[in-house]
Image (cartoon, rainbow, N blue to C red; front, top):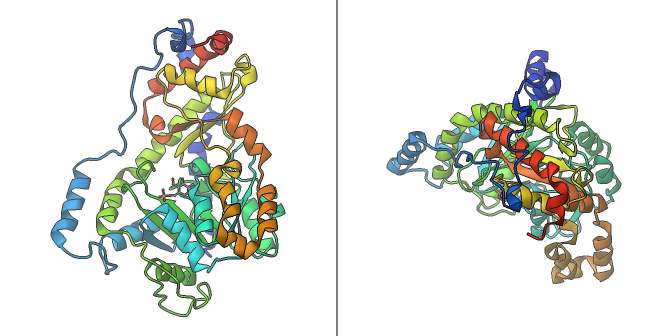
Length: 455
Ligand SMILES: Cc1ncc(COP(=O)(O)O)c(C=O)c1O
């Protein structure tokens, strides 16, 4: 692994100051005029507070058009792994940007995770530990290898995996820890890495939402044995569908290259254990050329998101009952794929989270309820009845598994607390953000009426 002590104090403090803006500066804004808070809420027939719109995603210009034309006209390397094709070039650039030794492109974030588990030869009888508060792909990649996904609960303040729950779930069958940088904010990297080290277990980072997020000045994607990134349409760096694997480990990279390319491991690898399983998870040159074009704007957009998140934090600090999801002290940058915040109904006359979201949407503000209860979803429950799992583990063990994966903290957080804005909200103007805060103040002021109205 890379020497983590190589981070300079200057770069750590430099990035910390971007993140810390909201915490260090006194609010400078003049928004407290309460422009909209005195008019009737839109849900009760008043005017919408938010009348603007956020940038249409993805943002494109002639850079993407020229990149695609270049691939078309080259008539080579469209889908093959040849030296210096667009995938090759993007891998070099992305690895440089993250300060990581290797990057391998694949055709989705799901494939990135699936490939890494394949490279570790995960299979029936193995257990992989992952957080409940994540996109279902993190679970599916484990099930696709016929291993047992062990879903664990979250820290209610951050919505990130609770490291203590992760450690408590370890058994002799555990083969991988699969934490997620959810929302693009780092999980507690130090705590999870320490557990991996103590139990001699590889950590695979699901960094699908977290390009350019950093921990103590170093980009995520550097910490585990490997990390997965998604370049799907909604992501901060996108080519429609696509994914990337990063690692600082030569032999692991070699095993991943093999798995993503029909199992053709190029040299003896301890990870694939000679299994040479694999498939076709390769990225096309078209996808990679779009990624390189999109990457020209990535750092600037990331800076805008961070600054706007800090500003929104300042605005929210004046609204009782609304608070951003906690970032751990080691966080020097969040990628803010999502702006996740906590809603406390006690400050909104006891109205439900669902009602709050309804009222905020009526004000013209796009917001989301976020992930639900994966541990209780029919998709997950059906695994306990899957004939392959019944053959491998038996009915008793599968019923016990259903008990084991229950996550009561997440039940409350997902039902009552967590609300999201997506990353494009943070590409808006300060005035957009002020209108959002105004809309929430209006809902707070009329909370009792909104709660009791039948509309
Ligand atoms: C946390 C997380 N993991 C995995 C994935 C899977 O990525 P993809 O959609 O590119 O397959 C996603 C994508 O939404 C994600 O958000």
